[in-house]
Amino acid sequence: MDRDAFREALLEVMERKDHWAWPGFTSGLVPAGRLHVHLEQEWEVYVRDFPVMVGGAYVQCPIPAVRRGLAENLYEEETGGLVAGRPHPELFLDYPKGLGMALARFERVELLPAAAAYRAWLDEATRERGWEVAAAVATIFVEGTKHERGELDPSAPKRPAPPLEEHPLVKHYGLPLERLRLTKAHRQVEGEHRAEAWSALLDHGAASARPAVVEAMETTLARWLAYRDAVAEACGLVRGPDGAPSRA
View (cartoon, helix red, strand yellow):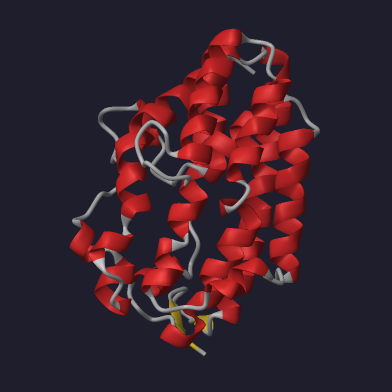
């Protein structure tokens, strides 16, 4: 698999990172009383331990240039020392705090079965399958969106960045704007992080690792889609005949 084919295979995976229920979360369709399920599952599945996942790629990587980029990403995620001012997982808790949710919930989250399966795969992929797989899963899939092509191709659509006042949690659930510190930090660092993530794999990853990376990304996508199906159901959403979400 040459570099261009590898790049295209990864982009095709990311363009399928698009779940039918997501418009229900961004339009206020999820009942306010069930929104905590979504936030709790995200926290327990990857948000709290995302720095550890990036660290898995770092400790397995023998290439100094790649390690430096991973170290910078890890440092910002774990401490907020470059941009955010606080650890990113800590800032995530601004969302439930600002919505009046009991933070004690986040200390004892019970994962849905599909969420537990996704988390188990993330742990395996970032710890046991080499740095290329770990970096792809953590820094491209988990951090990335269906708009990754726009990070590499100036003519492709970029990740949307609507005004903070239009953030779904603000617009539909009354989250105070000052609780969007994590969103603001992500917007400041993501451009550089996306470029480094793609360069690490395309410019430094071993050609022999490319098939395994693509296979791991396909597995990650499948586990993620099943996870998001379970969260949608737990939040009271069903898929209508037209494929769009509606309340159960």
